[in-house]
Structures are given as C-alpha cells and as structure tokens.
Image (cartoon, rainbow, N blue to C red; front, side, top):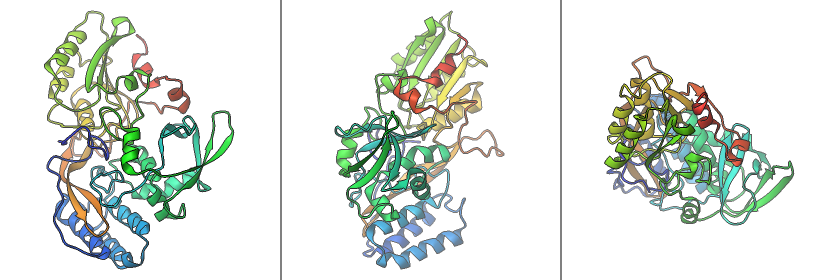
Length: 422
C-alpha cells in the first residue's frame, strides 16, 4: 500500500496513504462529530458493513451521538474508538491513532514500551531511569492486566488477531483511554504493578508523557513510532540491523543467505546486485528473508525482490524461508502474501500483522469538535490464494512464540529454526 513517508509517527510506515488529507467540515458539537464519523465511513470506506450490519452500525452511532453531550471527554473518546473498531478485521489502516501529531487534542501515554511475549506482557523500553525494563506488567490501578486488555481490545483497529496483539498494548498505555474505560480515575498519574525477574512485586506510580515526548523517546531509526515492533537492540541480528531498509549477508559459514527487509521502499541497484551475487554462491543451501520488523511502505516497489526470490535458483522447497510476525504489516504483508502465493517458501514465526486481504490507502477526516482525526480506508487489497481463502493473515508453517527469556537473553529462536539442519 502506498505511503507518504517512512517517518510518519503514528503507526510508522504502515498506516497513512499518500494524499491523505483533512476533509473540510463545520460541525460544532460532539454529537455532530459522532454522526460525521458514522456518515464518513458509509461514504468513504469501500465496504464498511462487511463485518457488521449497516443497521447495527448506524444504531450504535446514533446511540453514541445521543449520549455524547452527557459523556466526559475521555468516555466519548472510548465511544469513538469503539465505533471505529466495529468495522472488524482487515481494517488496521482505519482508526483514531493516539500519537497522531495532527490531532488537535493530545493524548498522553505512560512512559513505557510494552510487548506481549509467549509468557506475558513485559516492559521492553522506558523513558527515564525507571528500572522497569525486563519486568512483567501485572496490573494497572489494581486491575489485572488480562482484564485491562479485555476492555481495551474492542477499541483497537486491526487486520487480524496478530496485529491486534501488537497494537492493543499501545492503546492500553494511553491515560485518557484508561480513564474513559474506568480503569483509572482521571488521566493523570497511575499506579502500575510489576513483577521483576526475581519474582519480587513492585508498584510504581507513573506520570503520562506528552505525545511528542513519547514519540521522541521511543522512535526507531526507520519506522518512527511503530508499537508492534520490538526496539532496536545490540542483538539478535534482526534487531541490531533494523535501521537498514534492505541488506544481506551470509550465515552458517556461507551455507545461508540472510536478507533483512525492514521497509518497503525502492531497493537500490547495488543492494539487489549484492543479494543476487550471494544467492548464487556455490555453498548456499538456504535463503532466509526476514520481514518481522517491516511495517510497510510502497507495495509497487518490491517486485525486484519477489522476482529474484521466485527464480529457479532460489524458489525450491526447503531452500527459501520467510520470517514473519505481528509487525509485518501493510505493504510488507502484501509482500509476504505474494511470496506465499507464488513461491514454495517456508514461513517461520508468528502470523503477519497485515491481512491477506485488507483495506488501506487511508483518507483523513477531522472531527472538529473533539479534535481527533479518523483515518478511513479507501481501497481494498486482495492477495488471497483464491476466492475460498478465508485467512486473515499469512500463517507460519513453523509457528514460534518468542518468550521474554529469549528476548532479554538476545536469542532468536525464529532465525535458529530457519537455520536448523545447516
């Protein structure tokens, strides 16, 4: 899906189509904002009622519009988020995004970066010297984390369960969302409970940050702020080299070629020549392409790589591997789906965060009274294997759910599995 910039900082490269712009309008009340939201979906989105009936959708919109004048601002925010998420799966590009710098009303995240591993939700980065990295999040304001996530998930735009898993924690960190849900009282300091690696429990009161400060604290070199990705790190390999859009090297004493593909932008002729030369190596038995940190870009630019991977020297069963995950989104998910359709690649990791079919190329509508922008998909992207393909994601042939112990030790069981047997 075509995107304007790799540094757009709401959901990084993944979310906003070129030409997205504010729609001029003049509503002056919160109720009119709600109705504008509902009408915009009906007129802009290519298929808004695929997962919900039009009757129920319009009923939910009208109910919220009637309630809006009596709701607190954060309760109304939660109501708006819920309306947007009613569109269901395949709609990860359609939403109100907390860190959108174009929002007139700012939302304030707590100063953490969270990630859900196979063994729980953990702090993987922090702003300031909090000493919480490596700790498991247990509760927010005394509410168990599982219960908080259960309340948050119906508010989160997503293509499939994998992207929902990646983004839900981002919405959970927003003070106004927690207040609107009744998890905390007010959008100020909140007490979070953590469990340290030694089993000790600790309660910490955190102040939320301004969105600009949060973006600056957690921006990645290529993707800006993209909540589904793990932060750059000294190791493993795919995190250590995450600032490079496309690169390659040999592993396993030259028996494997590893291609890191972190952004869907036009590849340079030089890097394509390097990849082509490496895969021709006489000792090469495996070609591994890693898109676990690729949030998307321009899906008209990956054809040189798909052409090379589909060539007879690469496209053999047991020779080509694709490493995928929840952060493989938008144009990167398009790429993964193309590889799935046209090659014999073996997929390792998690299901892609982007859909096999999805709605993208978003158009921005300003809700002037509440101050939020809602992004509404304008185009349907279909990369299914055929009309009977009901998958919401490219699934892994070899599923691996990384644990916190793997991550904090710098291990990469996904790449290890792709190298197994060499």
